[in-house]
Length: 503
Image (cartoon, rainbow, N blue to C red; front, side, top):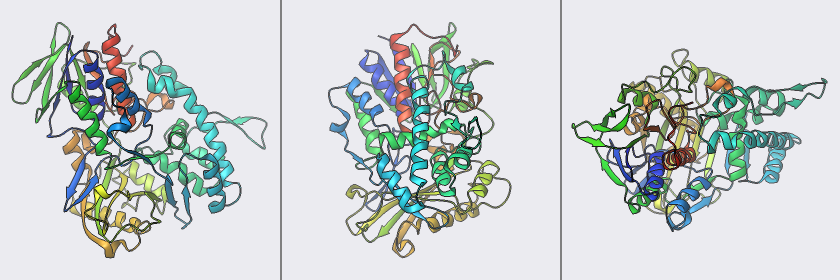
């Protein structure tokens, strides 16, 4: 039985902790804040409750597997999962609207044809077929296997298939989602639909690889799910599963150093000087922060490693407490597209340039009594992907984005301004304080191609006994992927032999 020290109590960390404890190891989790869940948190006030992190779940099979492998109670016995249908309503810049059914290709094709014109649905359906091919080619090496044997192949080979050109006797391969939209979808609204899936993860559709097509495909194929009571309930369930498996949690325990002995990780040191010895250390922290915790070089030339200079985008969120009940025909999720997508992306890439414009906004209106005082009120979460480098300490910047989001949300919530009791602002500064992520950045999912720029560092490091887990590591990014990284790290430690570095 080995002693395992886990840094952080995010979803990936807890998933790894539960699996390691089941394997017979003694696991202790050290979390610098006063609660578990990482970015999966809840804000409560005056009888209202809100998810401040992810509000929806894709790939629930990841957590079903975690609960099957770590105890007798399956996932559905500890949380209630509800399919969101329609999956989303999209409000495009020209005023066109379309509601897309959940996990129904025929339903999506019919809805798009009706809203956007004959042929639009077929073009989107054909795109999903090609996206499935990219998914089939990358699912196992990208999500289910350790990175070290195959990262060069993932980095260099574009899995999104080439498409025969109708007028030329050759095939044409789109290299970005923006090119897929222009060449294959041939409708600005369909292109905006694709780009909104990519942008939702903090990726620029003009520079992300075409393999980002797997993002809308996953939602289409596996559905969009809501956890009754909010996604925070999923974090609670994973935390309680850890406790059942005798995992120890230490809150308010900030790790300041990874200890080394005889050339390998040997434990952690806390801010108060306490030393906790361990045979293995599992870190669920920002890659840059992990480098600060050890003097050992974790990466070498040829390894996949995160860019320490350019932070990825973050999220700006408003929590809205509304008087008046939710109307019966209300949709759980509405995406209000930016008035000018190109300007939005330009500002996201270079926040020091022109004045910001209204971004693409997501409005979540869960029909959940647990989140409101009574039926005469409603809780709503409004969010947008923003630059983490904007001046979030400046009141003017915060006020400007607050107005942007409220203006966009009015297109999803009738009478919003008149119904608003109060609102709570959540900037990237809040995210940084709660998660420790540099600039409040939110990790994007790993993608194949792009010369490795969209992969995350391997779960192993150049320091034997030290492992990465969570959104900043392979496979990384997004709520379900954090659980996948937990499974990978547990497998590396339990099954051995120990891998020495990202080979």
